[in-house]
Image (cartoon, each protein chain N blue to C red):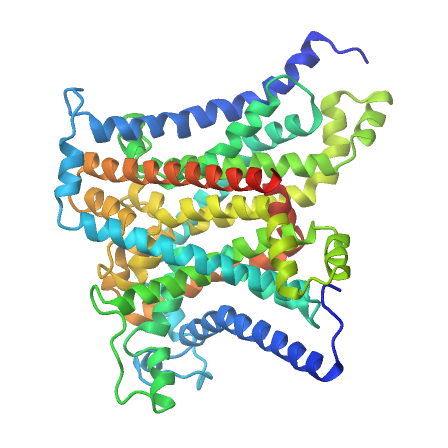
Length: 277
Length: 286
């Protein structure tokens, strides 16, 4: 469509080159994930060995089991899940009402609010963890899952607000108004009409928040000592740990990311692309 | 329905929690970072922590490595992301799968990306396996040697690998928003592929490019886990120094000085981008 009609032979050649480029880039992206998965499911002597297998020679759970049974790993996985679920809940509870207000009401100050939320993107949020340490000690939040979740929520909240706002814009206002003329209160109309329709989008936004928290390293490593999340524990231990531990750990963090992409693919563009402008 | 006083207040009530939250967990610590970096224990303004940061042997290597990484990674990402977006728009067979694969690293953490590329670049890793298998190397080469250029190249490849996807998605969304008539019109007037890219696609993509540039640059100045996972202590960056000053030496003030520096650089670069991109579009409009 955007291509110029050309004589068949040269056109076929350029078409082949386009395919080649597409495949080379796809290999660059998918290849390394495949390789680390091969290592994570190979026995230990293969992981230590050289040359490394490009096609798995023998599949084994030894390396993964070694990682999962390492001291403190299961606890840190549990912490990661707790932090991520708290983050998800907090950002939806605080962000969704704001997103709904932006989508449904015309009010003074909505533009300023929107610009303020957008401008938070210009700040490196991760560094907030350093000033928060002292405050957390006074508040008794140091080294707790809740403390990490509170900061992760600050990181996720602006995106949650903008995304939920775009989700509610996509849910027809007329349906809600119809419900209200039939006797629903505003809250009732929201709960019975807008919320069910917005649910898939909200779920996608929640998955995204979960992954953001699950992946975050710097703040989690700064704010915790004992109750580390999985990435925080890995970054502290990584350079002293045996090779199989690293690769199994890498795959263990990666796996939810892949699952996330499977679930949220349809919402990818509304979450990231179009609405960012 | 007539708007009651309550209905007028409703949006503000809905916004209030988020405003309070961001004030406590965003604005306040942001200001606090400067307090920690520029005030001593007695509350007097001081430059001693900043001087200590600058005087540290790791400061200039960390600053220059971070600047170098940003300067190399961001342009590479934009070229690659644009190529990826254009490839998807070229309506290849299986372009659905292509979008999926290209967007995959969006959800991959920087730590996982570092580990993934460690399997490639480590001495007994895949790159050496392949190069030796092809007969290009006699024995494994140590890519991730302390402070080597190869270690930096490894970090660049890993960061480009991880963070190009988000740029790709933003640019693809932008591309899909450009009406087809523009390309058709350009074609009617005899514009070639490259001319259409330069005269139609890129100007129309400017808003998307601006968003992606700001987003990526701010994140790039915070680069941390990829570097640590790939090189250990071999390459120093600003965020890893901040982490070290707190985690190793328990010096909150110097760590906060690094944080304040990252913040200042981020804001400065955002300002520069906004100015540069705006003035150029105004010049084009004039």
